[in-house]
Image 1 (cartoon, rainbow, N blue to C red):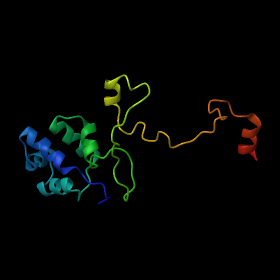
Image 2: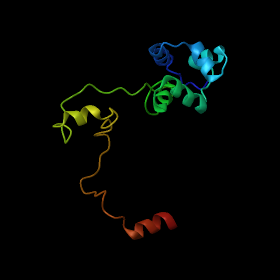
Image 3: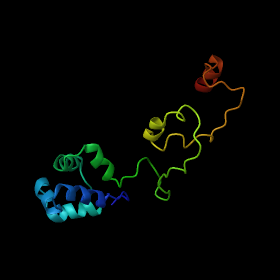
Image 4: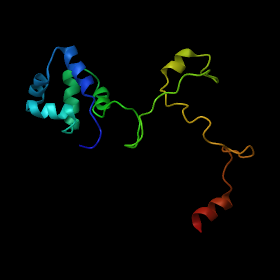
Length: 140
């Protein structure tokens, strides 16, 4: 097992929503019931073909199955790092302040790095690079 945990409760809810069981899913996938149990417990990896067939069986988008086969955490992290959590909402400013629907539809990762990089006042990041500097950097 790789450390990525499958979101078993989500899969169980989806099966319950359809009125089906893990045994029914196993029959649809042409797998042994124990293989499906091990897969949903995270002891067996789910193949891409199985992911596609499960999405077909549950009548949901493949992207939803792909998301929950890895535990449902969006983004990348290290094993010792906690999952990203949105900071408590504070007074928003900027272009999204007047448009609540835009602010609500954006993923919480947007803006989380705001204020963490400092650019000196006289630096223009849009200015073309000096040719001699580029030649010196890459050709010497």
